[in-house]
Length: 144
Image (tube, rainbow, N blue to C red):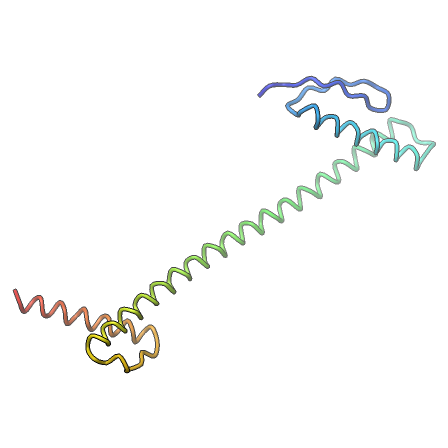
């Protein structure tokens, strides 16, 4: 990646920064650093620029750690949600299979003139389908 050179003025001092960030990004960084340094200096007028810069660095690292912890929490949540989504998809597929078996069982019952006989659950529907398949296999075997 291309390295960009950027001249930043922080607390009246000029610094050359080399990196991959855009000028707009570095302008925002420089403005924020100057703003926070000025805030620290106004809260403690007796503090030196060096100590104010150190406090700013400590605050920045603290904020970075908090954001990294929050990011890790979000990544854990994403992983959990992805697992739940996969589980939900699996359940949806199972429901579709059960619905297909129930529809097939109802069609078998209709063909056999028993459409008014209720199918109480998916296990019963599967038994109807299995018995019908067994009869079809036996018919084929008898016709050979």
